[in-house]
Image (cartoon, rainbow, N blue to C red; front, side, top):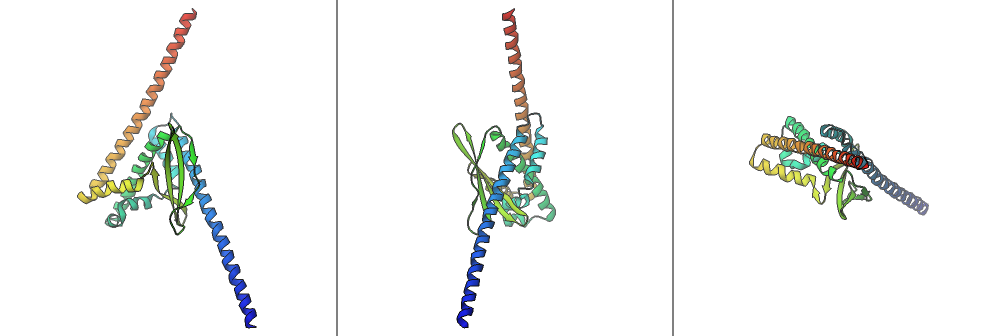
Length: 240
């Protein structure tokens, strides 16, 4: 009788472990597929906005932010740029203001970098697990410019409401590490309000640069149109 019960228990444990293993494997595949789908939907949507030459840069920024908001965990990214030490020193009101400024800083920076790739074809790698614990996923995208391979990495972290981007690496440079270096350098010498003012200044400067780029592009188009018109007139004169 004891032998029979041992067999029953052994069979039950085997089935339970095997079933759990299969379920876990399917869950992991599902997570990787979900991240790949998010990136393949989000990146083209952003590039489509950037390609709209008739759209003002501010409107582009707002529409791109609407696209990124469901995919990026901005509050977590903001916390990471300050680290526990400095984030914990902020009041609740300052934390909210910092997140808002951080999003604007990221928005302008991301748009500025993405515009370099707006007219290029994006290639996608496979999503893969990052580190142990099955809590982080890495998704690589590739852009080829003049035979040079540029890698943009999207790093996702498991949240209660799904997988969210917590960092981006563009050509080997982590946005979170880059911002953290800038912000902490200021906080080590100055106060929080000074940091806020410096971020506002960077955002305004970047905004002006983007607007100037748009204006320059419009001028170039007008010049090309005028050149085409002149060529047509010269051709008409010859025919006459």
